[in-house]
Amino acid sequence: MAWVYIPQNPQGRFYIGQTENLAARIADHNREDAFEGKFTRKNGPWTLIWKEEHPDRSSAMKRERQIKRMKSSAWIQTQLLNEEI
Image: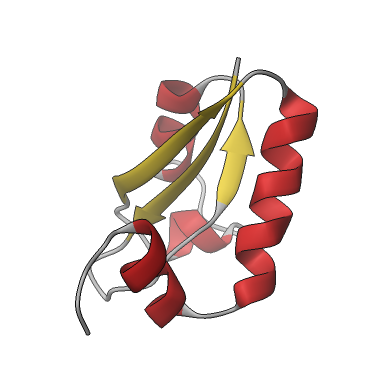
């Protein structure tokens, strides 16, 4: 089982990723012991706001690429989170 997920930081920025261990990955994004070179560690804390289960990593990677191609926080808000802008 694999996951595509989107956490959001307090500034409203989104991160799109995929993983086979969702809890460990979110914890890794929120680590405070190493900041250099990691976008999520420098811009956190992150709260998981959306997740989607996939049968395998290949499927999750395809979905992650699809979402990243949208390059729009408005698309994430309206299509995935069902929010009005």
